[in-house]
Amino acid sequence: MKIKLTEEQYNRLLVENEKDFLDGDVNFKHIGNKVTPFVVRLFNIIAKKSQMTWDAQVRMIKNDFSLTEAEAVLLTYNFNNFKVQKGITDDFSSVLGEPLVYYGRFIFDTEVPVFGTVSGYIDGYAEAYATSYEEFLEQLQNGDVEVVPDWNNRVDSYDNDTEWEVDHDYAHDRVSDNTSDFSEEELDDFKDSVTIG
Amino acid sequence: MKIKLTEDQYNRLLVENDKDFLDGKVEFPHIENKVNKFVVKLFNYIHQKEGPYVPSKNRDIHTIITRDFGLTNGEAKLLTHNYADLTLDGEVSDFNEFLGKPLEFYGEFKFNTRIPLSAYVNGNIDGWVTGHASSYEDFIEQLAQGDWEDIESDWSEEIDSFPEDAEWDIDSDYAWDMLKDEIADTKRHGDMQDVRDRIELM
Image (cartoon, rainbow over all chains, first blue to last red; front, side):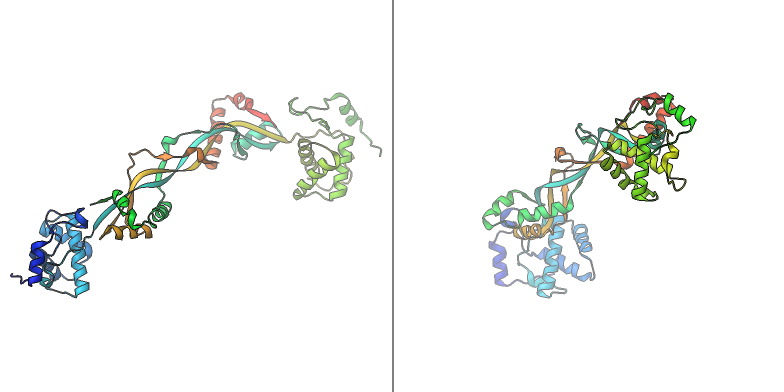
């Protein structure tokens, strides 16, 4: 299959950085940052398989073209983007040389709030009103007493047995709060906490 | 007001220990272990004030005994219990008929034991939030909107927890079970004296 280029597309392919995304923070082994003849061919093949889900498209790009998961996700995103934005249905030759939009996994390092239930013991007593020791003993046996801890005593607890869980609601609120007021100037600091991949 | 005694009642009042309950374990400053003239007067007064006894009147009766007769909380509990006991079988118009009758002990016992507790504790662990985005700005937006995909943590890391903030609660279900098991075990091994030694009267 031959692909025709306009002069502008041809020039763009010649002079621009062909690998990097996000100002050089990311590049991929098998694909560049623009639509190459290989990408056009890939898009055209995907386009022929109509009614594929996002996951199926990613899977197909990975398996049939031996690309990585990250490359497949980025290409799937761009394939669907071109389809919607440019109304392309079968032949993607017209986007040859167009920049690919980066789309990938970002990881933000943060402190995760967790919660757990911890167990312990404290000295205290069980109490009840009774007419005799025997009656009180029967109440103890029937659990018919009130259990009263003496809070002046120390609690013996077993922290190591705690089963921790992520406090999702609080995590949600806290990450939102911590990131909702980032200014442009703080972007570099933010990038230090982010990993891409 | 004169009180008539049978010979039997009179003899009992003469010879028996008038103070102790539970083989000498308890005694009270203002009352004895039998219905004496003072108790008869007290019961008649309650009857006059409160009318026929019903259990819901216990609190009011207790209040009358402590407030109008200046007795202690423990004495009032015991007398309320005995008043209820005496009227259980029907209306009593004059409590004279019970003069000399032993009062039944009724008081608060406590058994010293260990109580299981549980508490909800908070902490922090190092972790990360992930999401797919097309730029740092897009990702920040997702974070700010709480629109990320996953939050994960490295559970091999140490958790900074704050157990000193723990608000302890009695683990009630476990406490009952533990107490019952403890008594049952002791009973099985025939060492009830150990249990008895840990019981105190309050």
